[in-house]
Image (tube, rainbow, N blue to C red):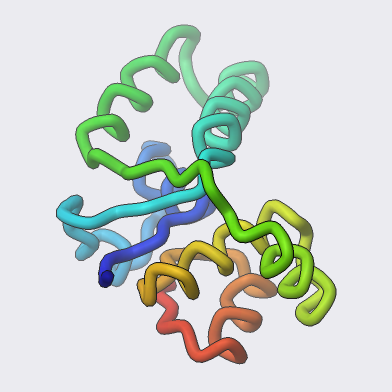
Length: 131
């Protein structure tokens, strides 16, 4: 399978109005986007924290989430646990980041991330990175 696994940093850069998403991210088409189920919670947390900090007006989070839903990201709920643990140990990643890398490896997909440590681990694992 091919496609793109998108992490929370890349998704937030596409959604938040004052973020400058790299042109490489803006070129992502919604045809085959994937993410671990964790993205559901991460995006909502990013938006609510930014709302609390006054970076987003109250209620704007819902509009951003609706726009993100239009990308039809397929959320994966069946990570390979042993592989997630191995990747976290090997690359000194959080389990959260290892979930994204494991999914990209399993799907033979590219990884869209602005997280430098995750991008480095992906490249060392022969995963193409969109950053």
